Amino acid sequence: VIPYERRQNISPELERKTQTTLSALQEAAQFFRRELQKPDHLHARDYLNARDISSADIERFNIGFAPDSWNALLMTLKSKGASEQVMEDAGLIIPAQNKPNHFYDRFRDRIMFPIRNRKGETIAFGGRIIGNGEPKYLNSPETSVFHKGKELYGLYELRRDVRNYNEILVVEGYMDV
Image (cartoon, rainbow, N blue to C red; front, side, top):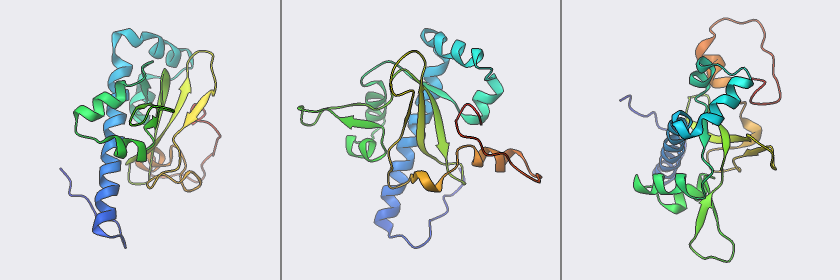
């Protein structure tokens, strides 16, 4: 295990909260990766194949799948010790309307694209619906660790995998990257 490098100029309390949020997001990324490999989610792998997303691309970008379930992620993270407050703060679950203390998974039946910061930490997700439905893309909300205007999807992978380049092409969507 590589020791974690402390972020600059933040209190120990905020540092703990940040680490708890990042841990929940990392667990979610692993959950989505496992779900993509399950036999009952062949339709998700078929979709990626039809879009010319190779297994190397899936591995490189850590692409996963959110099952069509109201609480699969919630229950999995809860079993690993994550609180509902942490999951909500991370943008992974949403409170149910008219049902106090009830939550449901934000992402359901979607191809999941982890958004990673420059250090490679998963800080958010973009989810693309496979079939018909709206919205076509659903993104994580702004959180304490994710500020949409400050991140660029695929930058971590570019910096990790490509050492020398004279120019880069910036594109709009996850699939375009």
